[in-house]
Length: 75
Image (cartoon, rainbow, N blue to C red; front, side, top):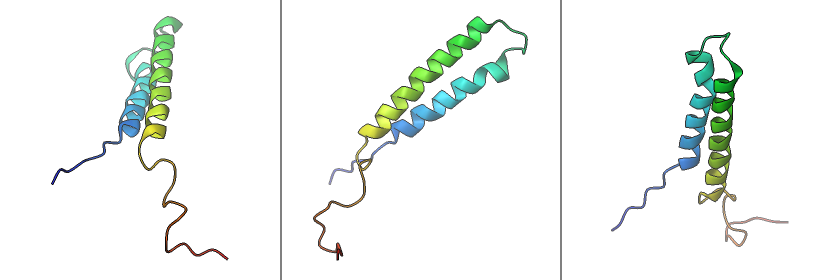
């Protein structure tokens, strides 16, 4: 029996994006130039967009049960 474990890559990438967004506040001084902060913003934005695409591509992201379920009660 082969076990298939689904990894939530969208959640992992979004946590990395959050860390990249927080890094300038934690690492750089308040009066630092804007250039390095802009690099963090651009990299974090690309990671966040990648996380959204990865989350949308995961199985089960389209909804719960299929429409033709036997226990579906409709009026």
